[in-house]
Image 1 (cartoon, rainbow, N blue to C red):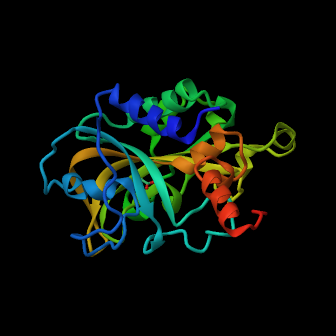
Image 2: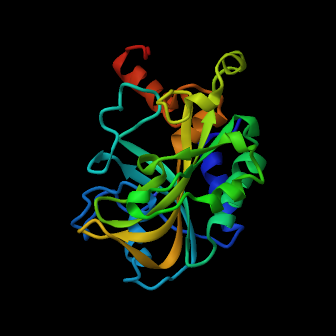
Image 3: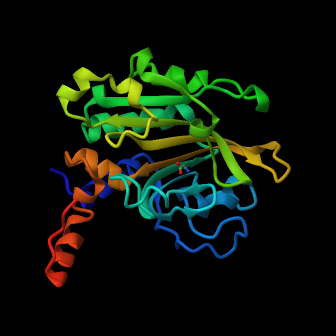
Length: 276
Ligand code: GLY
């Protein structure tokens, strides 16, 4: 079984071997952006590059970013302590392309890493694509769906709405259609009984999103309009603790080795047994 440390390293190695500069996690408290208090995604530290205000130093970057989702547009606070797969602070594995590769390679890399490198069961993976939004004059993401069709049967490529498949950093800022990868980690008997397809995006604790590939093309302005970005940008975010849960055959993030050593230590200090 791969440890969480090995999983994190294999992600970085995979992208380093494909020309990505590996950078450190940015601080979680944001100092120079009045639109956001805490880092809520890996892309935050690259916002000014994405908007074209800063020069592109490395066209390809990957990292593991510490995030805090406790307020604003991305707020997981109500889920924490109630379910097995949301956290206030969590780690997000991400890869970026600034005006370099776009949808095709982002999808190829993601699939290769999950299915070939980590060897997750391909039959347990589902993907979603943006269904479009006539109100915003945005079309269905047929292009992404076409690339996914190389790997998955048509019925496991699911249309998703603006809420799930158009990712925005906040009320303003970089945004674009996205494709999410979901995994079904239920026991085989349960999978025979209920098709995983019907459980994607239904808040089932064992049919969960693990990776979001964002195809950034717009800047959301304060008046709500969408302005094209100077470059097309790939911005991905994978839930590290969830990936560890899937890789380690667990049904709760808290049962992975990201948390168990801490829980054991707390048991020792308090003399209390951890019980779910
Ligand atoms: N920026 C991609 C994500 O947070 O899902």
